[in-house]
Image 1 (tube, helix red, strand yellow):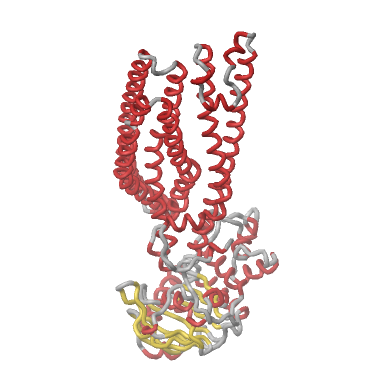
Image 2 (cartoon, one colour):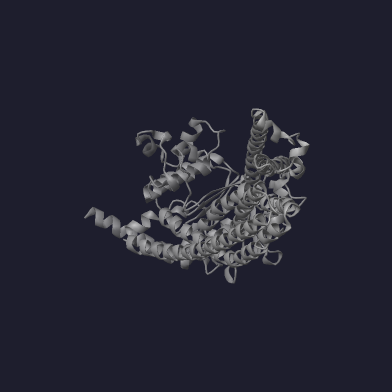
Length: 615
């Protein structure tokens, strides 16, 4: 990754970003532009040579021949025709030579353009991906995954198409118009004026079309993002969709968004059809004018047959790039829209560390000091204070939405506290003083809904790292009591788990995630309801194995199951974002508070289930 990945939190226009990214492609674009000029020169030269050949046969004096023909030594070749065609051979050889030169530089132009455009877009993709990797967790929770994917794929492809095709075509059209009409006006002012009169009309029409099309392209782009988001949600949540019989609902929801998306593109198709239809009309009128004026001039002897052919040829060379200019400008409109959407990502602030942020081993007591936190306008934690002694275990109990998981997110700095919202310290040092990478390297976490990659079980336990041997992976799996089930798979640890671990049960996924956290062996470990999908017997076995493995490690166990917290040195009970109770399991069970009520309820449920099984 180059230094472009080290993006600062400075707002830049998308055009500035593209200019910055193009630095590595400027040499290739310079070669492409130089080659294009040579190609255009050859394209202009060929009609003049053909004009010479035609007028030579027609008996036009050499003095009226094109300047380029006289400079090339072709003046007087008309006499060569009468002496056996030697002049014709020389003229034909020159035409072939010019065509070969044009073909070679056309190849050079396209190759350099491909190298420049692909290099630019590669850097754009790298920069986007690097930027997204370092954006705050809060940003990822506020935007749909499908929209991110759409911006990183479809929008980047639109930029790529413009960089490879349309940008150079706009320059080509301008060069052709300037050079062609410079020659045409020098040949015959009246015919050139008749031809040129339609060029401003085409430019103006293209500009108006661009203004109207841009808003429609933006709406279509956003609709595509929503369509991808719906598809991504459906594919990721396929189990829920099937379990609740929501196939028809999801199909109808996708169909409605797809119909809206198609309707937008139908409107754009109508606009494009109108553009090309009116463009054909303008082109036809222009050709009619040239033919009428040319016929009138030829009748008066003011133009030769060769000159008339040159006018028609040059006009054909100009009209398609000028008409294509409308398409190029519409693509420019789409590209500006896509660059704007990409720029919204690149302009979003990154996670940053202070210049003097620490990167030292982390150890010591964990202290939450009057911590308050809100998600937007919704308060989640209110004046929370507690201390976890180094090497001990903290249990966190509470209802859904009481702020349990938020404690873990704050400790990992997935969310940051404001200065006025208290402090979290480890070993007496505020965690905001540590580099995020250092902090997260020292805090292992296993979540209730773990994410597994579409890789092998061994790779998922190892966290896709190559530094852990298979023996260490198996040892971590034994601690999380998932090893026996892994061995029963046909490919054992080489079994590919499928996207998001879909081939594993909920309990197996949780235990693989616990094995991953155990293998990391950090001084601080967090288990966020990561045994919720495991039966109580396996829960007890895992906790017993963890006590041996994580001895001396500061552990935070979040759970709704009191049995899971029975080995904790200290338990806090969360209620509506506050600590309602705090103490050892024995103290809380005797207090008669929330903890005791939940304990009695769970024991009665467990007793009832056991009695039922006995009967």
